[in-house]
Length: 380
Picture 1 (tube, rainbow, N blue to C red):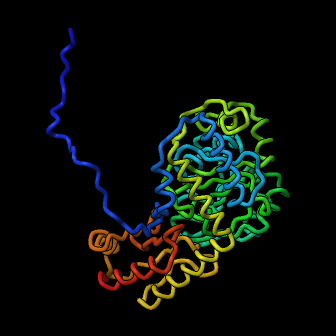
Picture 2 (cartoon, rainbow, N blue to C red):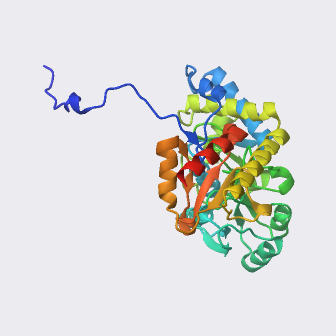
Picture 3 (cartoon, one colour):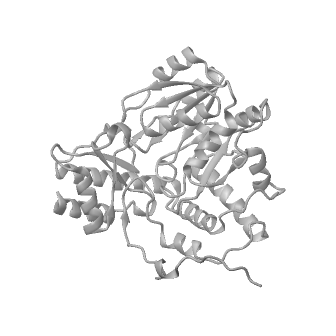
């Protein structure tokens, strides 16, 4: 006899087919996906150990090496958002007691500090006002003072719109015997990156910004130097899901089961990476730069100023100073509700002081700028 169950009243459920608004996503991410990426994600899934999917994983790895300009063997996607890829770099490189020096000039530098501390790192910081960057001499002085095992920097600080210059930093790290870890969440696909030339040992990114895919399949890479440190660990990696020793067996030649990959997200990531490669990296970077300079000009004509010095501004994300007497949240809300345009507000120290405007991936085009400027003229 079937057991009597208490069933929640179905009449309280929304049984209508899913409907979502058609927004122009010009915030700090996600950005709108290219139609080809959306089509790829709509394809029928296969098994996560299907030969066709394993071949696709190999293609993702090759494409990631191209967009990052690296030959790192350990280059793959983490099944999770960019924060999971961020944590993977920390979890695999930091053991209890390891010295970790973090450059903090924004919200995500502080997140690296928090993560490294949770894994037992002896964390020290070098700090600058939000929106500024570190000079080589400032980094040299901090390395000389602290002699860390790892230097962690945010290449593209999503909270401020600033781009940290990387030329010469890897050489410094080798002089002081430490690994170089960088955050490329808001730079990959839209800002010149040369991991091997810069001497970067660990890097991570996301899928939903410059690459123009949905969140949830996040690039991750480790150099041979970082792998040597991993091999010399005295303790197990504290995060099982993000342990490269295990993930590497799934992404490697043996393809040992580790977890059920988000099949359709990887379809989308592969297609997004293919589109970048088809356009060509230099052309892709130039498109982002050309379009953001057009945006800056239009914003200036509206009388709006920008938070970051031009030399260090990101082509993917611009922080716009909210004028005195203007309710920044109200303007952003009007853009969303009346014009279907999303922009972001400030985080941390910049909360209430700036808007964050993203021109990333598929959205980096003059039409995006024109639509935003026309809407701003109406709501301000």
